[in-house]
Length: 227
Image 1 (cartoon, rainbow, N blue to C red):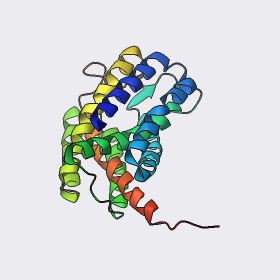
Image 2 (image 1 turned 45 degrees about the vertical axis):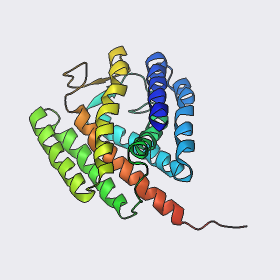
Image 3 (image 1 turned 45 degrees about the horizontal axis):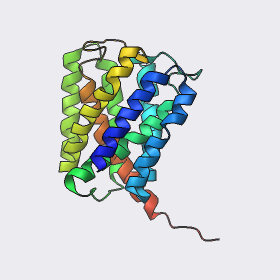
Image 4 (image 1 turned 180 degrees about the vertical axis):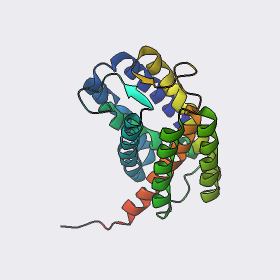
């Protein structure tokens, strides 16, 4: 059931972006049901997962756009990125963990100590791809090294599923919006996208998903305040 829901929401989100990317604020409103559905499927931890994605996703994109990797053609007057990115990135870790749960039957226990490592990994990924993006062999080689480090730090089936899910979902979700001009890459190679894109998504999927899970553990440890 979770996989069907994720697939339907992907179709809905892509169709919305393709149709309304030139009206970024309306698009943000119409995308809101997607993360809400995903959060409800995950229960209490879903909110922390969504918030983590809504923060880390746009911040990472701002760094990448500023570094010249790609450009959004309609940002609604905002610098670098459009407002609907906050909503769409809230879907990313939530959808990924639903995929993991549907395959493995459960989500692994969160480890708060993973958070700083995941954040460091995101910083390293952005630096590598911004610095080396003009050399496809170098950026792929460095990305594979980072992927090895991630698997060494979290040698679990869930990490492999997260990477595979990100590598597939990312380019699939981007293909049509890129084709209609919602955003464009500085060095397009295949269907308007760079060949390193699946690897970049695989890395970010594992990092942001583990960061969100760690944050959900920290949030659950905060005692409730009774007035």
